[in-house]
Length: 165
Image 1: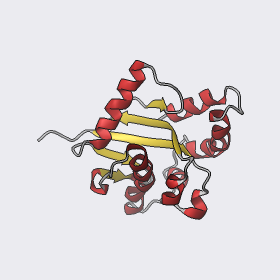
Image 2: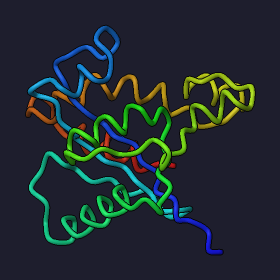
Image 3: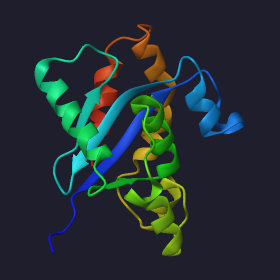
Image 4: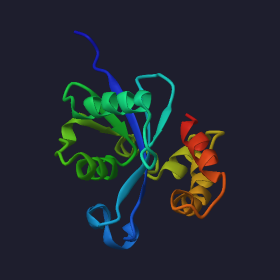
């Protein structure tokens, strides 16, 4: 039997609702909710980042079509850290239910292996050299300003950050 393909997904989003106070479902239901960046990788392939805030050229539109096809394909294993967030965001964006059994949650896998569930704490416990989460906390503060035209070239820095494994 052939091994199922895996689609690794990481989203950067915006909403005026504070997710820490209201939860993910209220966050995605906000009228201004949007997926800004979609980072993905097929199997062990390179990480690619799609900017959903910009007009897509033909190549990017085909790339997005392939990612959406993978997300909707029940034979593709979707992988994310805290899949409830990605599923809620993509369900809103695609207007389609995404069954939980098609997803693999690295947060749950960390907990099952005795590691902390937060990405930064799990990385520290594994003594990983690259601690992306610290950089991400700084970038999360500037990215909405980038999207709405209030910051300079920092958008490129954010896309480069998301492209790192």
